[in-house]
Length: 256
Image 1: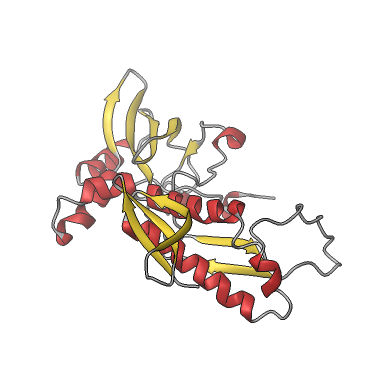
Image 2: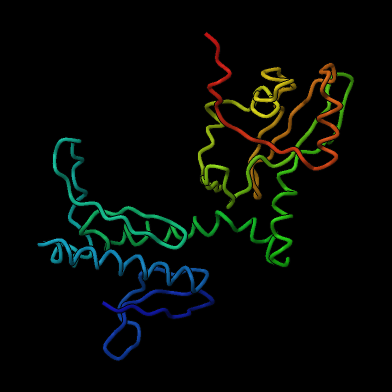
């Protein structure tokens, strides 16, 4: 079934397209941008195309709302086929035959909305810059710098993660990413180069003082020990903008 987008009160609403080419029936969802509305249409059309490939599912998909939620099935039993709808910025899994229900329309709309919010903060920083300057902005955000000191420690800080960015393993991070801060705590030891450096090796050079998510990413502050003989070298690297945070478990540190 064809769909159309109508602008109402500054928002872009998706409707089924009538025979006269205009909107028909109630809106299937409204969005802040036309791109989000187009994403919803793409999701619905992709799901409808998948339904046509599954015998006996067309009648079920036509029902505006199923009479009840399907019962969970065990891993060994055969359940309803799953359809993965890939949007430009989000992936939504919906049960076959329920893609047109109000619940799943909302699910698709919410997934699209979250995918936009995931990079909104970073976009605000980049939208005024030329393309060649953007990489420098992200690199600057993730650079670790000294921000203070006391008798025993030097406090350093910088963004460990930037929302909308990705790490060396091509994993993206968004405000919705569960970083397990409530499970792992926010104080951890600080190593240099994951403990691979031939001189420092596994020597602890400090400990994290704060790991706090905000609108830009995950802000990480730590205290480096002044008594460490390599502190001067680390401070020189910070002056050059050559230090950044990296997280993760490192199995090579374990000894038996």
